[in-house]
Length: 165
Image (tube, rainbow, N blue to C red; front, side, top):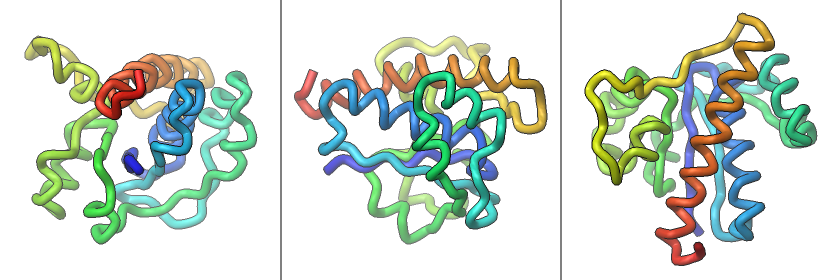
């Protein structure tokens, strides 16, 4: 079983969006039984529902049931050793995790960093995913579309890694 943890700040917007989209990408590749995806937040309160904007973006993609099930939770240090890959939204999230759990250095990446592992990265290329929390539905949709593309690429990469192309 390959385990992925997706992390953002509050675990009500970006990380649940990405984790649900990633689960769906693995399901379409026939890897739902081989890959487990979860999410958490650096500063998350426990038990909060997904934000309305994130829920609307998932509803548009037919993923409303997963959106309804989501409840926020904080990153637990003990859980970090149990996962194979930690995907974060920003470099600040990465630095926060590494400060708390330096042993995760070889498995924590921003989503964009992970997608770009095999290609040169332009120093100016943005590695962070913007936080649409509290903004317009258009901003949420823009982030959801961006995450959807990244999640497809991540699922493809992991499928190759698992020999399940």
